[in-house]
Length: 385
Ligand SMILES: Nc1ncnc2c1ncn2[C@@H]1O[C@H](COP(=O)(O)OP(=O)(O)O)[C@@H](O)[C@H]1O
Ligand SMILES: [Mg+2]
Image 1 (cartoon, helix red, strand yellow):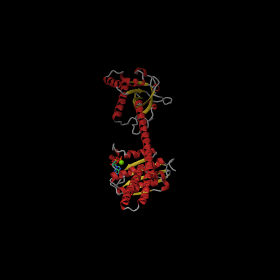
Image 2: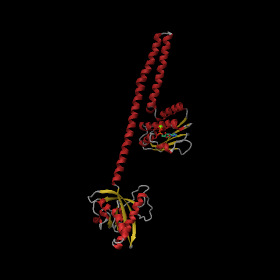
Image 3: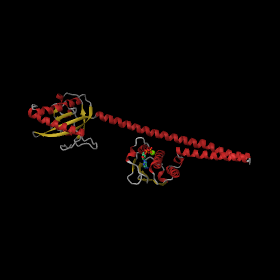
Image 4: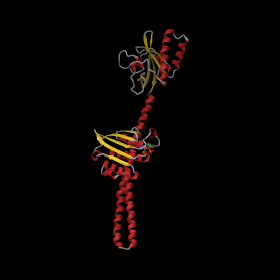
């Protein structure tokens, strides 16, 4: 591990760094005059009373000084630490003649200072725990002394793991709820279509028979025509409601036809031009992928109608090397950074969740003005039919 004498730490890191330097200075003064002069006494008191665990060790990793905070962290007294090897308190690197810096490894976190390292602490009761340390080396009378400022990060890591687990569970819950919702929609749409739809169709047939039975009486003919007109309106509304719940094309034709229906409906309803550039054969996907992609495009079109003030929308879907590339572009006002942070807006969040559910990636940007562009890449392995 490379030693850093010239690192420029900030904030809390700066305090740790200063403590390290102070520890190093203390050590030199300690050695020089046995602690009799005032600055040495002052430094010693600061290190002694610091909340941070501070250890000084020589080149052979023998501890020459430890403050009470360090002793408490390892479950011993400061006196018990002095003269012992660092290996008794920090998991040894498995090297002969390990220097103090060998006890730590870069923890790989982005943005970390080069002086910060991770290691594993060993408590007196045999327990191991995660630590992070900053090391400062200083030269004293021709030998290097290392001052190590340590933090016990086990609690922080425990909380991070717990948070990650609960985040994971929330994602699974949201995905399960989406699936249940989709199943319910499919079920209701089918019932509407099959039961109510059939009933209305047979009523229309009965009306035709009734017209024959009643003969040509003008009053009854008008009544029957009126009833027929109402029945037709009911059938049309029912189809619209059922299709809004879940388009039959998704289950019967496939994603391409479902998207075509969505496009036609969008153009008719909002008067905004919309192109669909896709090949039917490339969009033969399983139910999970078809449904997710359909709902993503549906949400994007709803957003365009509500927010974009666009004149033209282009939907592009094509396959490349086992991945489906989806681009949704509009020429409207363009999405802003702050739009994507709105806490109360769940449309974009839902889109992201659906993409992640397919292990894909999504970027939403306004970087090609005018308008908004959504790019999605979905791996198709296991989703083609
Ligand atoms: N195509 C778009 N063009 C311009 N702004 C958009 C577009 N899509 C989304 N937005 C902005 O992003 C915000 C968040 O969208 P969304 O999460 O779907 O929530 P909602 O539609 O309920 O407001 C919208 O309120 C809108 O300001
Ligand atoms: Mg929305």
